[in-house]
Every structure is written in structure tokens, then in C-alpha cells.
Image (cartoon, rainbow, N blue to C red; front, side, top):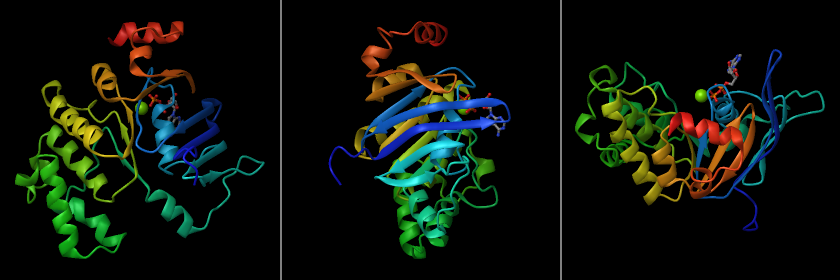
Length: 257
Ligand code: ADP
Ligand code: MG
């Protein structure tokens, strides 16, 4: 693969719910290792994009490629062509996602939350999965809670476990959808610290939908501003946050900064 092939390539991506056109022809190129902040008003399609990338939802048109290979290919009727299961599984395994509302398995311990998928899906042995889980829990500062259950944790702790759980599948691209939005204000920083560490230390590609503008400015290589299902403006944080070109971007930033 040539160096210029983007790791993630989105072309003319469209998504409609009923008469509501939510994504109106998105085009995005992301290089391996880039840290991308996605900002924009509520309802502009940010979560929809992430869910389509994660294959949790099908688009109505356009294409998504990872490493030059199709994740979604649409036929002329806008119906998804059924890729074979093995292909979908392989493409899906390149991505990991963390949600606003954690979605931990409530009946499993913290450690088991991390080891379940590696053992079931990736056929990793129990002892290897356990070791990897403990390493990741240490990284997010949760190794002391390996045997606790989700209900015994604070929101910030749950979210740090959810991040570690996604990392346990060793994705190449991580999607974070407003992972601090459901947290009490005093717990936000502990999750941002984990994300900051990941952004600095790992060569993973990261896409973060966030309302934490200072954080976005600090860690992002590039900022995408979403508005009504298109990327209205994009650029390095130094440009987007200090001299946005579009009036909509200026207005949005005024409300959140
Ligand atoms: P954002 O994450 O930027 O706030 P979303 O991607 O969640 O925006 O939503 C974009 C639009 O799509 C909103 O108008 C929302 O109501 C609509 N939408 C999202 N998911 C669904 C769904 N499953 N069914 C119908 N409409 C949806
Ligand atoms: Mg959203």
C-alpha cells in the first residue's frame, strides 16, 4: 500500500432516517495515527457517522474503506451489498468504539468485561487474556478494581474500564463518542487523562466526538466541524479554534467556548 492511501476513507456517505437526511455526502480521509476531534451541534450526524464506521448501522449511499478495502459498498439501489461474514468480521476487528453510556456487562467483573471478547472472538487463551486485561487496567488506573462489578464503580471508573475493554481487542482505529458527556463534572478529568495518555503514547488512529473544546485543541491533529450532515470546515486546532472561516463555526464556538 502506498503511503498516501488513507487508513480510513469515506466517500459521499449518505444516511437517511425516513425523510430526515442525516448525512449528506461526507468525504473524509484519515491517515494512520492521526488524532481527529469531531465537533458540531447536537443532531448534526456525528454519532451516526461513528456507528456506520463501526458497522452498527448501514449507510444509504457512498462508501467506507479501511486500508483501501471496502467496509460498506452500496449497490445502485442504495442497498448494502452483503459482504461475506469473514470479510465483515475482519474489517470490524480493526475498529473499536467507546460510547457515552459505557455499556459494560453488569453481571461480569471488571476483569471479565475485558477478557470476554478476546477469549470468545479472538480465541485468546485465558491466561493471556487475563494478563492483557491487567496491563490495560493498570494503564487506565483501574487495576485495583479488577474483581469489582460495574455497579460498584463511579461513572468515571466505568468509562475507564469501557476504554480498556475496547483496547483489549487491539483495534487500529478507536472511535470515542462523547465519552465524558454522561459524567459528573468532577469525574471528567480522569477520563480525559486516560485519553490524553493514549493520544500521546499510542500510534492508534483516534476519532473523538467531544464537547471538551480545550481538550480537542490540546490533543487533536485535525478538527472536523460538523453541521447538518456535512463537514462544513476542517483544519488544525490552531485554525479552527482561533480563526474559523465559516460563520456557523464561529457561532457554534461562541456557544461552547
Ligand atoms: P449527533 O451525534 O451529532 O448529535 P446523531 O448522529 O445522533 O447526531 O443524529 C443525527 C440525526 O439523526 C438527529 O436528527 C437524530 O434525531 C437522527 N437519528 C439518529 N439516530 C436515529 C434513528 N435510529 N432513527 C431515527 N432518527 C435518528
Ligand atoms: Mg451524538
